[in-house]
Image (tube, rainbow, N blue to C red; front, top):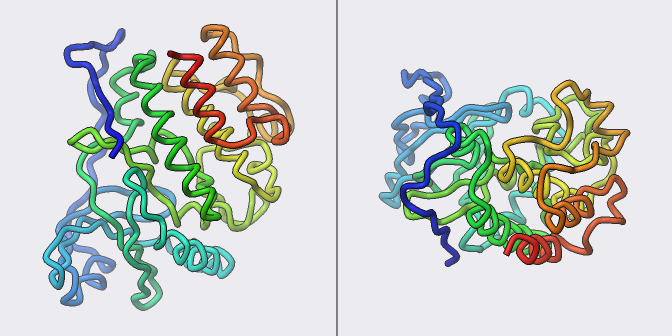
Length: 293
């Protein structure tokens, strides 16, 4: 199993206090609906555009699991639900040490529940909040090496993630990287940018995804390259005032804040035309590794 090696004692250039989100842990109608004898809901551990995540105990198997209850707005989107079912069937077969395991998809009344592996640790987004100027290059190299390998495996099995961003790359307490939110990705991309519901972070989405075009694995390559640039510099490729139309219909400004070998690799991976990007996400990972070595 590929592991991350994080050097001890390395301080960020501009230390910032960890930003914490306080979420109510009280009972809710959803939690009561989930707690049916099989699962005991312990607390809310996350919440986002696609739904709320609970830490639960699987009483039958006597183990902790994470349960994501889908946002009601997504549940009402029939196309999104069909895409979720289709993608979950595929994701159930994804067995990779750096991809979160999905155990099952269940329906309780009007609510869809995604039963997943429970992870202890933090996302890259949390790390970036403490390192706003970027993370060490050797650490970023490992992140991209492992993420590219995991995503290449998913691509070989017909799955495009569609939401590669710092919040969906998780580092466990024992330093194992996990790509998370497979399955939810299909809900995010089911209708394209022109659909009723789009879940994602525009700054990390490829131009073709923002336009609602049909996607290929090259879209994940674009997103992973934007992630690499963010991890190195603390900045996205587009200026803060860029609109979604700007990002969807115009190339990003030239990259000029990283070393030349890295710049060349990132420029190719984030080419406006998907056909001009690396032949695969594995090829991008290899080129990025060589450029940062």
